[in-house]
Image (cartoon, rainbow, N blue to C red; front, side, top):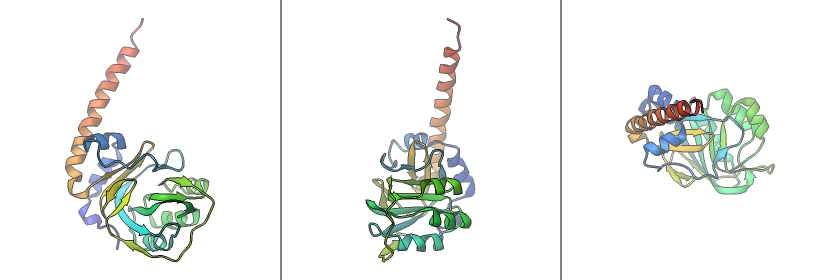
Length: 204
């Protein structure tokens, strides 16, 4: 199934991998950024890739298992878990399965567990919270539909960029123009930063 990578070139993904989420947000007129509750669960976690969407019942991860089976290498599995914090929707075992398959990471509007294990596997995960409480596996759920995550609509194939600052959602149809705008912002900031650093190095 996957996220239809034919519509999202690897070159475009690589371009976004070099741009901080903040610059991407500025390139989208400060839109398309998930709320601050969606954050990396281990220091240094970062991801980029096309969204493979999953909508699951609160506290239930049956359809996340289906998503791991159906997603393609390089995909970011993005989950609407209704923001529920009472049950962890994934842990290190699902992370290990996803890592073996080449999944680029997870963004989950809900809770997860086993942060240290997921860090050890090198699986980037962004979520609302950590809890040791495990999930149910009853369903229902949906795959490959437009969902709401962190206050942003996410459609299959949208480019997801996550870093220390949070998560940006780039609409697939506008990805090229947004990349260009974000790269302009990134260059402008680099120029200003260089000038400030030069001033700071001046002798008193």
